[in-house]
Image (cartoon, rainbow over all chains, first blue to last red; front, side, top):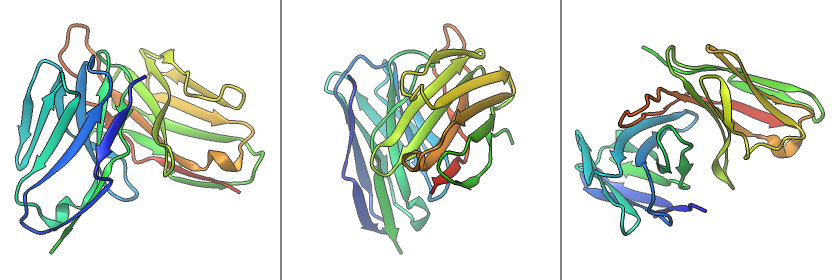
Length: 112
Length: 117
């Protein structure tokens, strides 16, 4: 059974700092991995999707990497801003269009 | 701006009452998911549909929960009878899956916040 773990559970950093969020999964036979952002009281917004054949994806200040063989992904946020404060979740799927299996999330707080 | 729409946004109900949550997926999407989010368990899949046919409802307590897609523009999740342990946020999500395609971003609604007292 696939298990997805995110460390740390919570993170507080000063504005401007570069930071890394971690995601690990126990079954490396994934189809893809997605990073989501969730603001309080809101739904999830997809940030980046990495196919199993890819090593990384970038969008603006965000960079996600994937090492399928070791069962790890990282989300790198450059020059963090208070507006980045949210919970970040990673999720994996095992087939195209299949169910997402989520980690518990990392709650990020960026202090001005 | 295409979005997944869920109703109601908030619901407080008494134990034993029936609760129906509705979801309008993004037009043209062929895959619909129902997830439940709690502090203790995080996000758990309840059921999902492809082209209106149920693909997996193994995460759903069958004795009290039911999920349907009466048509391509409406998905419903029903709880009867409701219990306090059902208190959670219920999310609907949709996506477009194309055979041979290379990826499927999933779009979430803003959730239905259910409290059963």
